Image 1 (cartoon, rainbow, N blue to C red):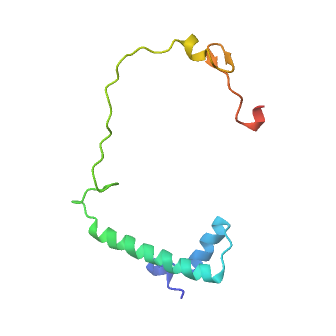
Image 2 (cartoon, helix red, strand yellow):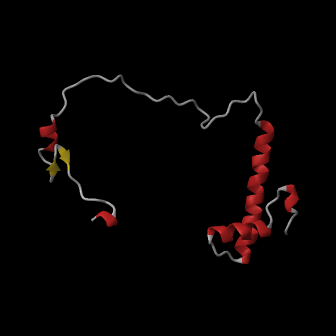
Length: 105
């Protein structure tokens, strides 16, 4: 099932090498399956590359998406004291929270 790597095809050796880099233990059946599946993926990518020319714009979504936003407007906002009124802990006009990194506790 191993093909020549000169043609850019996915080989059993390539899958074994990638599994080793990722530190993933694969059975022989999984290696054979992934070799076939990855080869199929490369074939499909090659087909898309044949169609994708300079006159075809790159897209991330088939339908244009526009972000719907509203203009910023100044409104009544909480004062610092009001925002901190129900805080479990505050220090120097800021919320005081516990450290999330174990080294700093």
